[in-house]
Image 1 (cartoon, rainbow, N blue to C red):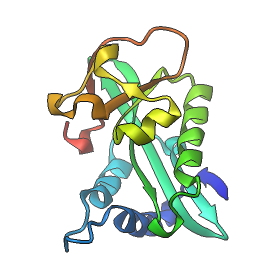
Image 2 (cartoon, helix red, strand yellow):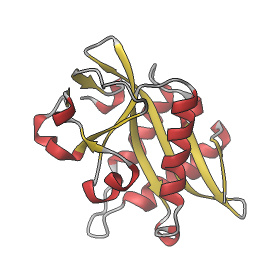
Image 3 (cartoon, rainbow, N blue to C red):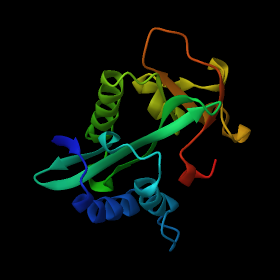
Length: 170
């Protein structure tokens, strides 16, 4: 498996991958995550170094993106998501590798923390913890413990209300 920064030429394949990863078999609608990606690429919060693909034999089988979010409007943090892995390639460590790569890049760039909204059982395996007890408040209180944070330093996390990049709408 090869991990690398996505290029604009990768985006059609990332779009298809995201649809496969998030499609509900009981629905005929395109998952919102696919449209969200196009908006994230065009927004002020897009950070190219945090859009990473996983390739196997030259085929994109995974993708993750983290964009600039803000705590209390002036403390920069990363907002992770979506994370997509081709259903045929799941449970092979691709998602874990993408999360580790984003963590490595964020740490090397001096980022303070990464927040996300996701499955507790999955993301806690990678060091994420519920954000609210840490003092990072989501824009939607119903997210509860599904709103998580990964502190990238030994310093205490700043506290406040987190806002994702504009396309998230929250």
